[in-house]
Amino acid sequence: MSKPYVIRVSSQKGGVGKTTASVNLAMAMSLAGSKVLLIDADFINPSVGIHLGIEGANTGVRAVLLGKSTLEGSVVRHNPSGLDVLPGEIVSRPHNPTVAQMQRLFKQVFKSTYNFVIMDTPPGFFPDEEFGNFGEAIIVTTPEMSSCVSAVRLANDYDRSHLKHGLVVNKFRNKGYELHINEMEEMYDGTILAVLPDSEIVPIGVSERIPAYLMNRRAPFSSAIGQLAEKYITKMGFEFQAKKSNGLLARIAAAFRLLFGRG
Amino acid sequence: MAQPYLVRVSSQKGGVGKTTISVNLAIILKALGYSVLLVDDDYVNPVVAMHLGLEEVGSGFRAVQRGRTRLASVTTIHPPTGLHVLCGELSQKQYDPNPESIARFARMLHQTKYDFVVMDTPPGFTKEVFVNIDEALIVMTPDMQATTSAIRSSQIFDRYHIRHSLVVNRVRRRAFELSPREIESAYGARVEAAFPEDDSVPMSIAAHIPAYLYRKRAPFSRAMLDFSRIYSARGEQKESGAGGQGFLSRLLGLFRRG
Image (tube, rainbow over all chains, first blue to last red):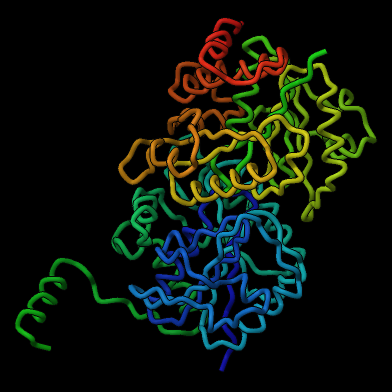
């Protein structure tokens, strides 16, 4: 059995959409048939729980870090999607885990049977010692200068630590004052994995506690997330189970099956 | 001599607009006739210079903070406005702020001749950063994630008796947003200002000109001006030693501008 593939979702600048990307990517992978664990390792501002409507869990990543609980004992199942989540605890004092504590978490992660582990991280830095545990890193950026400059800086850090990385552009509006995709590609000097359009279904999803991908899989944001999920799943040699369409016809058919008890 | 009013613009959550608010508050206070120093203390992502279109030079920020260089020798002047700026310095690794040097730095800032010192702060601060300052200005966006982080910040500030106030940025007045009233009831105090979501802000940043100078009549600039006028009274109160910030003193602040 192979070890889970751990993807670190990161950025130096805050507010670019790390949590949005993490939550929706994990959801899309899970709905496509992979076994996925989403870890909220943003110790500064944990908000995966808010996105998924599972805030208030009494255990989470901190308990595992401190050795007070096991990974299995702290994972929460997001019922609508079957995604497993290790939530972050909201505490009044942010806590930076030590390298030894992170190793304790990774040890349990690598013993688990997940195909993918998506780790949401705080803005800023992580000790280099931990980079060896990640299969790769996603750098999230918005199409503006300040956030791209910090993305390039982070990419340099990863290069120095020999960690593979790819760029995800979020909140893309295709406006004149934004950076163009080509400009970002040139600055970053690497692959752009996905371009996620700016879309109101994201904030609406957060306010409803239903991730955008789950709310509407046909929205442009969701299809971009779906393609990213497919890239990862096929790259790792798993099968991408395209969900039955949830279009009008399929829904009518489902209603008929329900009504007449067929199939 | 009166001491400057030291405000740290802060939030636990990133990307809410700390730098935008810091830069424009400083620019407007300067335009209202105060002498202002803008300090970029965001060592994770220092972008004040980028917002102002200043040449990025090795700023010497850390040297000043450690007391090895004089502040005046590393301050840059923003040519269009004459605003004094201490540009940020990037720390390659997780910068571990030494509480003693932070406290000394704040004391040193208090001994300057400025009316206001506005400091931009990285997301995810610790309480040590707030030693010897007059106020923490919390910036948030009208969503749940930013609200919980603002409440968390306010709890930290309350515990250490740090004066704090709250402004909401990027308000679109949409149904899925939290309303200022909801935010107030969650935060337990008044929301001092609501700045509208406005395309002139990203446009101004792309042009390296602060939004207030880029389009004075844009909704964001107007709201920022109104807020800064009221805000300017705080420096005056400190000077006169007056306590509260009642209606009269705020009115007085309005007349003192210019």
